[in-house]
Image (tube, rainbow, N blue to C red; front, side, top):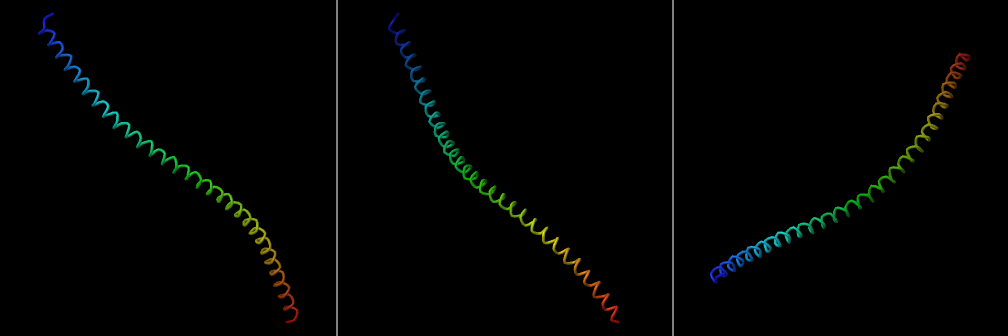
Length: 109
């Protein structure tokens, strides 16, 4: 092989080496950008997880308050039922007394 051919091959290999180096540099730059974006997304996901945990705690608190409210409504319903029964008894007694008064007033007249 002649010197000219050898020089041409070396020049060709050198050009390929430069192209490969440029490709590697470009690929590394893109990968670095992707890594940055991934770290950003991981940070956002961590923030969202924290917010979700906070919401779960708040939801648990609301559920507890709702159970307490239901218990109080049941208690009030029972009390109103008892009160209604007493009111009906009082109305019946009132009606009976009004009838007696009317009867007594009829006898006196």
